[in-house]
Structure formats: C-alpha cells, structure tokens
Amino acid sequence: MADLKCSAENCIYNEACLCAKGDIMVGGRRACDCGETCCESFQQKREGADSFKSSVTHPSPTISIDCEAVKCIYNSNYKCHADHVDISGNQASSSRQTCCATFSER
Image 1 (cartoon, rainbow, N blue to C red):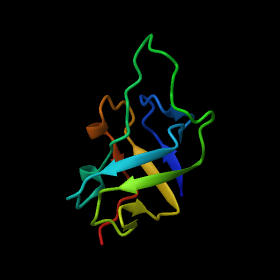
Image 2: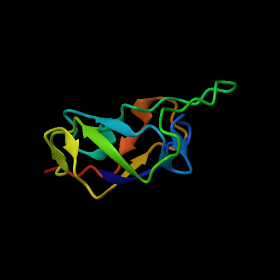
Image 3: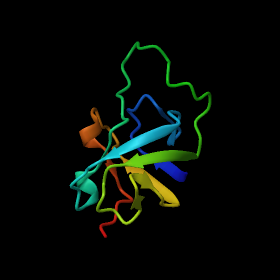
Image 4: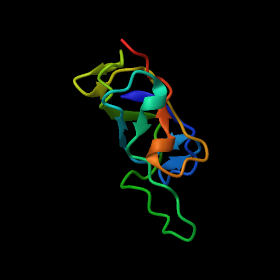
C-alpha cells in the first residue's frame, strides 16, 4: 500500500487530495515517462450527481495501486511498491488528463 496524494480534484473519489475508492489502477503499459501514464480509476464529478463515491466510508492516505506501467521502477508484478505516489490532474475531465507523477523509468 502506498501513501497517495491526488490532485485530480474533479474526480468523484477525491476528497481533500485523498482517494475514497480504496484501490486504483494506473495505466500506461508502454509508458516511458509520467505523461504517458494515467489514473484509469478516474471518474469525473458531475453537477447534481449523487454523492456516491465508493464502499469506502472515509478517504484513506494509503491505498492499493495496481499498475500497468511495466517500465516503472516501482512496478512489480503489476503492483506499485512506491512508498509515496502523486497522481496529478488538476482540472482533468477524463483519465487521460491525469498521470502518475511518481513514475520513474527503469
């Protein structure tokens, strides 16, 4: 489990830069830099939508991260093993506008 900070404020799971989803998927199978990754779990907040976030009652500072970015030094068997992960994407409206800022190529 990684310590996660998320700046994708438009995500339905984001609460005070923490994630209320419980686990996330970082995409970017062929990524060679952080800009080629994304948070596949991103879901844009919609005005007037229900306040449903997930089955997790409170956002947690630690989270399980599945990761497709096989060239990242923190990826081991499709799991992220970084101590701290930053997901960026302020003003994102889709998962492709987010990225794993912690990505570091092997």
